[in-house]
Image (cartoon, rainbow, N blue to C red; front, side, top):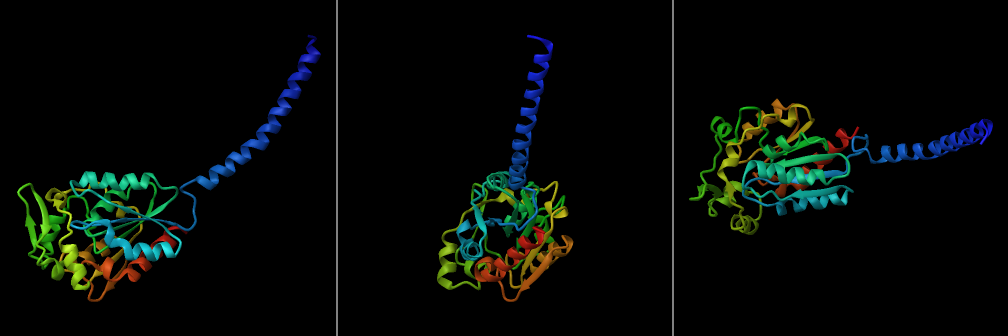
Length: 268
């Protein structure tokens, strides 16, 4: 084939390729923009992490309020068998999300979100009467500096802890209906004692914005320890008068409001 004809075919092929690229690549770019989990905008994913001795069902009142307001809410059911396994259970939920999230922890769940909160999906942390540990600290060591009021902790022969059921209503859930508190006392999830001495090498609250709720009548975590955590993390803080450690159940409207505040602020 003459050289002139070969050049003409090559030119037509190049033109067709350029037109195809112009049509396809912008579409691909637009698709990437809509699926980019780091894109700014309202945060609609909320992940709730329960604390020691309890399961995720206690979050139901908060869950219902958030879902009603249009949020996608996922609960972590951590096994409470070791700190690392609980963090892994939380990361498994985060890995399944499409887009950014607010990570919320109650009580020991605060230690979990302090570690798991380094995940790229997490844009804000919310601590509900929860531990926000720093490097070198444990829940046990901080509890000695800021003693709580409960004497209900019982240790099993295989090194798990739970709260004496007769003391649970007064110490963990004083502002819940008595029948509900008694049911929860007898539905406890024994928790590995080792989780209370877990160390966190890279606390997420040092780099992620935080919100904190202090339960002013908490007998499980000293309210002054909660205030220390909140102040150190420069957290947006609210205090709930008369609230027990079960503040996430007894004051769900206030808890949901704080979470939504974090979702709105972190999404800007």
